[in-house]
Length: 115
Length: 112
Image 1 (cartoon, rainbow over the protein chains, first blue to last red):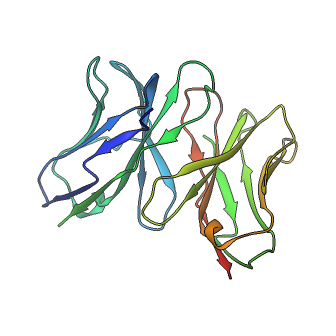
Image 2: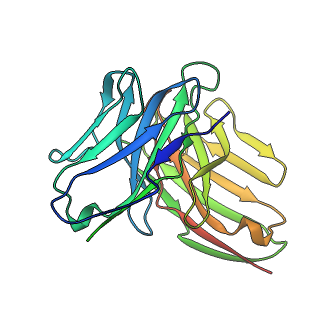
């Protein structure tokens, strides 16, 4: 049973480019969460999605950031016109709709570097 | 919203000693408290969790205690080993499907 998958693991973008980060939840999980971790800091919630629905985006910056979780395929976090301050590790986590409802399992993260 | 504070930010212990990390939370509606271990460059991994209907939970060398009245919970690691060295994060959540509010992390170093 594969865990949460994220790709790419490392992403380098120049200022002004777009970054697309992908997350495939664990099998059987339909809840996806995105978190951002700045160097030597904790994890900050960005957005919570279920299939085709954004449930809570209270942690998302108002501009340049968007997220989706389509009916088919992975969840995508999209950052437009990246700036140096976007450099961070972006983790997604998934949780189940049955059983251990509370537990969130994290992917390996995408480390975004903006040059 | 919820605010989770975590102390200490760094902790060094001799191998074999115990380590204790403490967290406080502000929202009395929070009812789920997981702990994650994150090794350098790796993903956060769930090591233990506790729900608000329980005061203590133990799993081998790791235990977590919860005081709902005081709104604090703690991670206890006994007989520490060098492989316990990592950053540990506490978190609080209100209900299933809700976001986790994380503490700022504790960097634990176990000295052989």
